Image 1 (cartoon, rainbow, N blue to C red):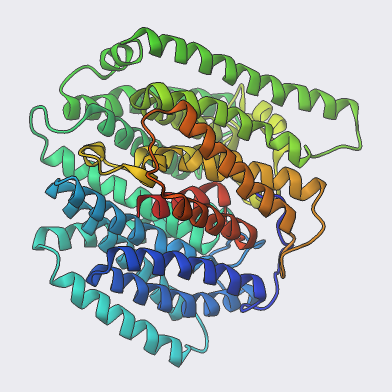
Image 2: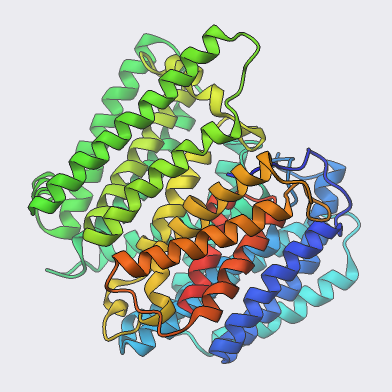
Length: 535
């Protein structure tokens, strides 16, 4: 969550804030390029150049109100920062898995990078295709960059990997058409690119592994995450289409919703997971959760934090009902939840990362399910959830869905989910890279929270073109440095090897991105900090 956001209808496409955001993204891209320095990193540089030019055209299109779909209006298109996330993650993953001498995940990193570039190029072509008049110079740059990327990637991927990239691209196209139509004003173009490309890639991986499953192949924990995410997304699409023909707010529809949820969960999701892990999923999950005494204590502790979070929601709503003039929770109150997730994730990272991995996936499924209940007004909790959560809405929740809390969970969890565990062996995550699991805690849990509180209460000097303050950014950087020092004290597995300059540079760069971006920072900042730390 951000401290403050610009009002809808921001300035010119090439305003100072947009240029500053682009400069930060280019700094990250060039840093990764200098670290990796191979043909794939040159592709990333070419992709960044063309994405910047296309973003200019798409921003103008959004300002004129001529976009085909309804996007979130309180932000620019965000095409450049979103386009670079998946390719850069693939590049740094390839490097780390190569250092760990794990050829399978090294190839997997190349596929991730190629898929990210393909999806970003498609989004750029889409943006130019619906722009009138079609910008000639931008088309030339897109054609040159796309030609170079396709030529290099074509000679770097096997036939099977090329088919895999095309499958993800096709899935992305259909998800774009379905979800952007069903959920107007929920995303910017960049946020849609980032979220839907991730879902498309996970769906393709799940289908691929389901068709080629072998006894004892893969980790049940990884399969659990894939099935949970894909299952919840497909369930949402199913109910969205179904309730076009039914009134979801009646008792009959609500009973049908709960029955179909049980049918889909017990009849599709659980058998699918059982086929992948070769054991009963419920028995495996219970055995996994209570395997050690430490896990029992962690689960009890997390239950207390969840109860406290629910009490905060109830208390703030009771306070609102007694103060008729107060309709929205202040920024500091919304940041309570950031402190709660920090208190949740740090013990999990320190004592049991596999448990945190699974618990975060379960929590994500619960969040998505409750959002379905709220969105479809499912009885008996639908209207209650609408009333309780309306207090915590901001301008980024202008669409029918409330996504900021889900983005917060994703931002904290992605640094733990994305790094292949086989590639963390043989010292490949030594030095600065040992901080990778803490990327979400540092960027969102600490940095964004401190910046928001200090920026809104004591900030006076504003960054040009934004409502973010210099004081908020500086205190954010300082708080993250203090947090790194505390991690060194309490986590004996972290040894930075005197790489303090890179840590300071990474934290400062991501803090500047937080100051200038108008995208969902709960999701974007942890990913960019993860990329820099892994590099």
